[in-house]
Length: 451
View 1 (cartoon, helix red, strand yellow):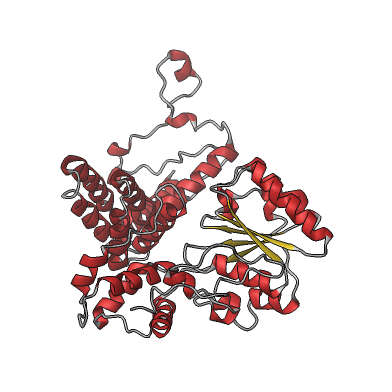
View 2 (cartoon, rainbow, N blue to C red; view 1 turned 135 degrees about the vertical axis):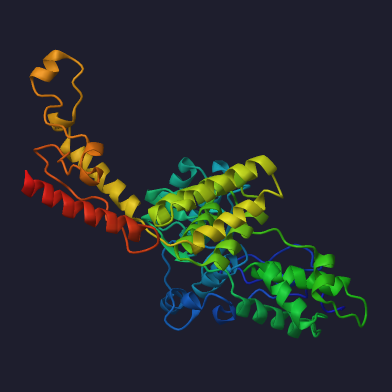
């Protein structure tokens, strides 16, 4: 394993782009992820939509002219590496700062250095990691130096730029999406690490697959885990999946309950329930539970799914979702989580209908448009003699006294006329409701003809 932790030799530091000053830092052990940093665009794995033939990054390098960019994607997907490669490929000085550690004072120094560099004919690619950490005023500071060409800004963010960056900056930069690495890309990284070190990972086939899953789409994490395996395995030992997890532990899921991951997973859970896939619904539910999501938030969303996507196709769905919420509230974690799982599976397996949801939206819209149209006086109570004299309640027919307990009266404002808002589907219990409504409509026409 001597090669794995060998000191970096002269000239082995990542290329900094044209005009970059050589590093004065002493050489020493470098993490495997740093030693395997790609030196050309085609060595970047998992971003073929950007780096392949015809990809946006390939075209930019081919034209040797960059505009400002925002790289949006999960950690460990190559954002920093690609920024370095763009600087090198366009002869720009590469300057890197982090929004976590930088303020306005440091930005001024960086901009002034870029201006001096520009005066000598050297451009600057300014890479800002975690750019979403800057506040609005700090982001505004970039606008003039972007506009006059002092810097070519490349910002990296793990958060949705639409929400985290201001519109003025986004209007001056192109957003490129970096994707989480799929298992194939992680596998290629591990194979490259094995070739670099001259050693095969001492893992069974199952354990290797587990390591890939542990990386959670993060290339840097996969190489860090590989290093840990090499450090921990005894000579001649091959680790199975259980031993692997015992040695490296499990990497925490990449999920921020306050940020986009929170909304992505609840959206996935909702859509798998709507799509009648109980297995996928259970998977996303368990991912949220595993990440520490608020259980009552999940319970509330299950109740919402019951009324939005199932409705009267299975009226029991709302009762099941509410019961799951109460059961969790009574039992707590972890026992009560099984009730949430039961509800998610029930909802996914239930017949689906958004007829109530659609009718509610249509009724809301109609109520706003119709304004204050009065109901027919026929169906209004008349608690005073005056109200009786002017027609309140006159002609009202008590449905329980009518044949089939149905009078067929018109309950709509006269100026609006009768409307149909609820259209039941032919799924689940709504088939019976549809039959009932059809019968009532037939009786309604008959009552009108009789009248």
